[in-house]
Image (cartoon, rainbow, N blue to C red; front, side, top):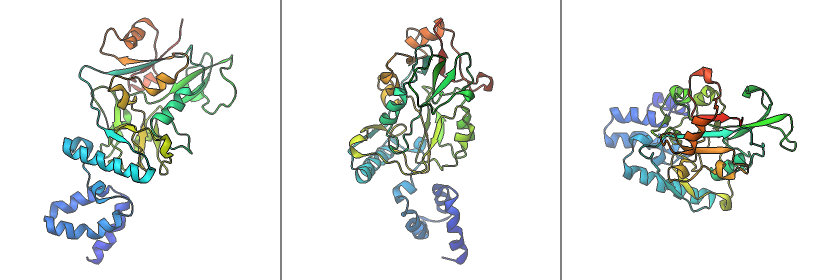
Length: 312
């Protein structure tokens, strides 16, 4: 390898390794390509396997390739976390577009929803991460910027109400538009997803989200084997690697199988309503047609599919 080639290797720390390898592969034959990447492969193996290094984008993989990837991830989870898991690929159902609504009149700020999210989605335990923030708000205000997420007193307080905030699954998600490698996109049922093996960790999406609904994995998640949720999906609650951005997916590993989100099942007051916006007989449609609903930061034009309302 020439001196010029040696100098190029550190650049891989700042760009997608897959992009670099694809660029090399275009100009070399198979044998030459294998020889050329051997020093790079040795370097990359310090962080990841060659299979992961060469893995295609989720949308580019055949069913067979995706199945192979999911089995590899199951093996990695078994090896690194000591847990037996099953990772599946749950696709959107025809004729379904998910929506969520929240009755702010009966939310008591207990954070049971955030706790359920933390457990269901295999979040890092030391950080107590969750896709849900519960804001304590002064009555009469709907400005989430004035809410407090770190309250530590008994709830509910008489002069306050509580507003859980998570991914709003926007119709026009700004986070999707800014991703430079198309690692995040909106699916047919309205859920915005992330291919965590394609994310390069630039955090543009995190900065673009007006609802602060994305999380960056600063460290490798720590989850005790006994606490790992084994029912996982590739685009949902599998344990995410360090250095990527993650977000709420409306528990697609549950909802695409006809179940309810974990946060809804955990709510002790019944404040949460979830369902198919395309079904005129669904509970979510009844709420939209009979309650005075509002969305957060409507003026931005993102058109959230997460609605709030008060009892009159």
